[in-house]
Every structure is written in C-alpha cells, then in structure tokens.
Length: 333
Image 1: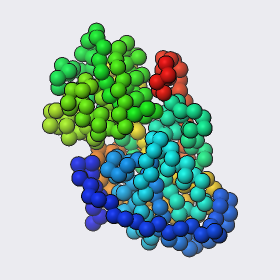
Image 2: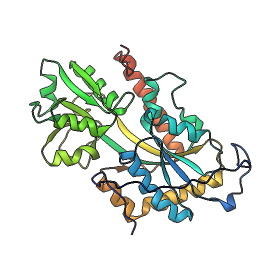
Image 3: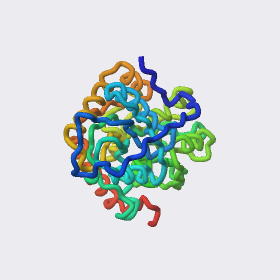
Image 4: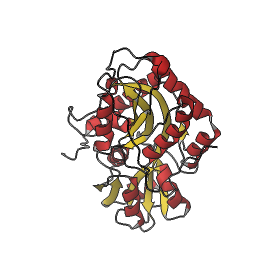
C-alpha cells in the first residue's frame, strides 16, 4: 500500500532528484507530440510552496499514486516564491508536451491578482487545467489568553484586536479582512508567510486571532491550545461539525482553498486524458482517500472545465467584496 505523509509527519530531508534536461527538439504549444510514447520520461510536478506545507503534501500524495499508473517517476519540484506565481509562470512557459505540470492553488488566480499588479498576476487561461483535487477550509482560531470563545465575543469586544494571516493575497487575508469589515471589528493585521508561523503566534498570544487552514490548526484545536470560532466554508466542515460557518453567523465570507493540477496551454488532448486517467486512479485508491481524511481535505475531484468555471466565479465574487468594502489586500489603503 502506498504511504502518504500527513501534516503531522515530520518530513525528513528531501531526496535529491535528477531532472532530465529538455532537448532542443522539445515540443512547443501547438506542436506535434507522439502521445503513444507519452510519458517519455519523468513528469515533473512543480509546487510553488516550500516542502512540508499543505500544497506540497498534496502534490507528493498525488505524484506517488499517478507515477504508478503512468509508469514513470513524478518528482515534486519545490520552487517557492510570490505565493506560487514563480513556479506557475515557469511551467506555463514550458513545452506543452505533458512532461511539466504544476500544482495550482485557487488563491493564486482568484485572490492574489487583487493584491499585485497585472504583470505579476497569474491568469488561469494561460494554463490547461487537468483536474481539481480538494478543498481545504479556513478556520478562525483564537488564543486561549484572548478570552474569545465565540465570534460574538470578538464582535462585541469594543477594542482593537490583533490578528495574523498567512500572507498578502491569500484566502486567509481575504476571509479575515472581509469578516472584520462586515462585523465592524477594528484590528491590526499582521501577515506571516504561511500558516505555521501564524499559528505559532496565536499559541504564544503574540496575536489574538488567526485564520489558517483547518488541517494545520486541528492538532492544536484538539489539544485545547486554540479555540475555533468560525469556518469560512459554505457548509459546516465535517471534521469540525460543532463550529459554525461565517455565513451561519450572518457574514457573507465564503472562502476556501482549492487546488488543481495544470499543464502548459496547448497540451494535446490525448496526453491530458492519460494524465487525468492516472489522477483518477489515484483518487480511487484507499491510500489517497486516507491521506485526504488525515489531512482534513474535502475531495473536490472535478473536471478541468469545472475548475475554470468555479474559480472564475470565485474571482468575481472576491473582487466584488474587496470593492464593496474598500479593502486593499496589498496594504496600500
């Protein structure tokens, strides 16, 4: 049985991976590809985040399963930077032959464009989406020393509160900022570069609140070291059924993190079909299902076309919220 890591696993040193260089005769978008021989070598899966985080672990679980069906290794290549934009743009510029893929996060194409210049933003239309993967819900947690047991306590505090986010242009920042605007809560935003340091700050009462992904927060929630106040999903999360959603509390803040796997634009249809079949085989495996369960991930294994439609809808919704409440995610207002 395949063994997938979880967020609670301490990752060892990453093994070195030798990448095969693309030859000068490599295919470009729209060029001919001998799909019968696909894949012709390792299929690289780039991740725009550091090893050990949610996106990286999902990529490794997916790659381990898909490589067995494809009959070729699928090394995960971590290229962190700009909330994933660096890795995504690099893959988008690669030959469209299916040998280079990227693990894409929804926030990069739905939220980050609201915080960066158009030249820095990633456009989903520049990629071919192979398949959706999963939904990772955000939860608002409070320090035990803050005195906050429910979000009503926060809304009625009548004072400035300190809150951490997982960075500029992330779902964490958007969800918490919009929530505070709607609830008329005054607060000081302290951005961190990921969920782990934001959670650490809550544990140390350096900030009173933080919005982070559920899988990262759950061990400390179960240990009673932080209190869950709200989740930002459309419906209650099955892993935290007693915690209300922001919508239930009266706030219009439907924000979650979604992930998908993508290839350069123009990848041949039969190559994409081979990739999709490999991913679908992984989705059906007991090991991958257990991986999702252990990491509190809700399967969102939809088609590439559905991913594009859904994510464009979220982008429109988030833009409307930011404009309605006159929010600057880049911190310029």
